[in-house]
Amino acid sequence: MNLENGVDEERFSASFERLPKRANSRELEEPAALVHSYFKREVGSVARAQLHFGEYSNLPKPTSLAAKNGVRYEKKVLSHLSRQFGNRLLAGPLFTFDGKRCFPDALLFSKDWKALCILEVKFRHTGDAWWQLNRFYAPIVRAALPMFEVFTAEATANYDPSQKLPSPVAFLDNLEQSFETRETFHCLHVLSERELRYDRDLV
Image (cartoon, rainbow, N blue to C red):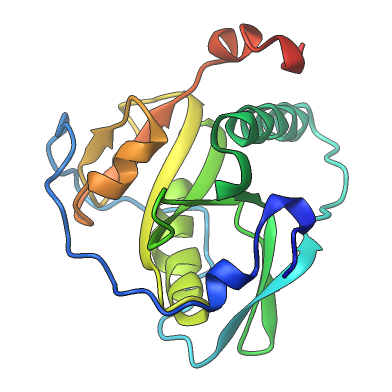
């Protein structure tokens, strides 16, 4: 058993039946035309992947103002979600795949530990979030943790409707709703800085 970072490793070795797809959440946008993303990394099929317990993201300090704002917002969001979901949130886990490595912002596990949601935190909503989640992280996580049904969601402080995505957006009141949303939708949870200010532990 490994309880570092509040996660029970034994839960991950159990064999769970994959959940059937459930009904969709609120469907608030029509599909948009595919737009180019600045995010270039795509993995296609993944032959082998592994989640490494006890190793987490340790990225270099940002230098630009925009990058600093993004990192500061991400830390506040992950701290807020950690208090909300407890040991069901795994922040910055290390995955290795086909000789490479990556760090999703976080994984949120369902209450029954049969499904997980990959979280991408963006201070400003861009098309990169969709590409990172669906073309990069999702294939890796599915290869590493085949016993879980995998969902994806973006948390952002500023939603920009002019940023068109390959999938229609489903706005979530709570990230738990990501487990009830069809895969054809891009789950998006708006968590503004004003809302985070009400969390006294983040001040």
